Length: 270
Image (cartoon, rainbow, N blue to C red):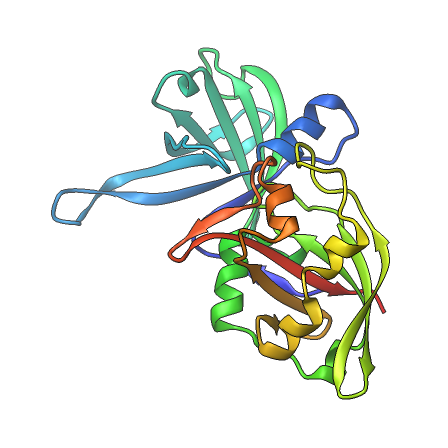
């Protein structure tokens, strides 16, 4: 499986426990954390202080914090994250570095001593993750700078279409087979999956699925290849049935310089 290395921030992942709290967290409130050295007005680093912020995707929240190295009994060397603004200052995080791209974390309701609060949940921070978990910014960047046109013969076969969400790994909404017909590419719908919760409809009809015109988009370069078994597209058609259906579900339609867009990927099944 292809991986993305993203040094702009640490992407947060919740454990995939099958309990109500973690399911809500995992699918509703994905997040990232980023950190930077404290600098003065002239851009000079001052002291050892490290500032940071936590940003839940699909929100306007940017929770300011400060990171400190600590050595705690029973936990060893950790990074203590103290939030500064209400209501986030009621919580602390402890981070444990695993390697240069992986950090384990635990969130607490704050008490007087770091690491002695009431545990809330665990999480993982990573700068390296599968393309299944790419963000919308990742998708746009790869589409613009790291992809190439798809040769018709490379598109032949069975593919799953997935919408790109910042917050979570989304299941396929469509499985289809591309095949050659005369001198053009055609598609046969194999299976239609459910759209995300709060969409206007439960799933696309076969007619609506064909209205995506995926073969034509491949041939015209609007769907591009990002490596063996992965294609990317960005739907910029506000009148398309999929675009209209998904508007009620948060976290999928995003705004770019040219207006609203819906990033998606096609992943080869066979």
